[in-house]
Picture 1 (tube, rainbow, N blue to C red):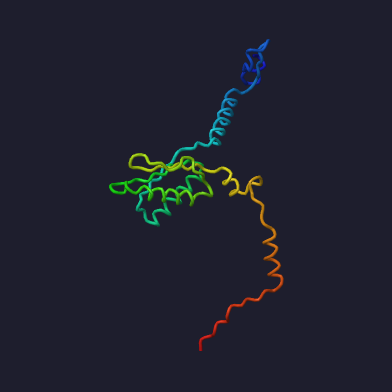
Picture 2: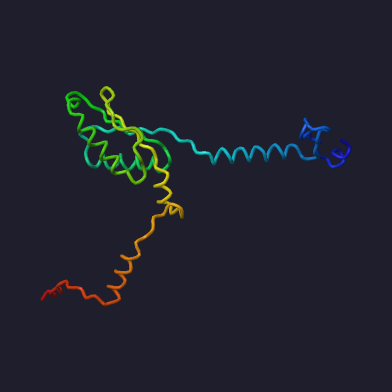
Length: 178
């Protein structure tokens, strides 16, 4: 205690279970601050995945479809699962194949970054499908050395050989206006 007072520090009991108890001379406020910073950093690195939802209609236009599908791809890129809902109204209920076609087209469009977690199923007036981010595809996209596919060197060599051989273009020459 006297050594801690002389150094203007705190005497902190580190291991009370030990025989004799282990104590340490330190600045306790600084220790608490650093522990809080470590905890904050570990919380920041932890990713929280949520479920995002995107709603489509059977008669959706191509522009709206593209915009919504881009958002779905962005959500998947951020690591969220995406629940895609097709909302049917009135007589549209008699044509569930239209909704299935849209869901299949969405799954095909974002297939590079996602996998179908729950297949399309009819739930009342809605048809639902859940997409989850595909971790392996995202690692390949980021250029992870473990996930990159090997490049076909033969095709690249053939192109270089054709260019080296001095291939001549057979496009017709344009006439100059008189």
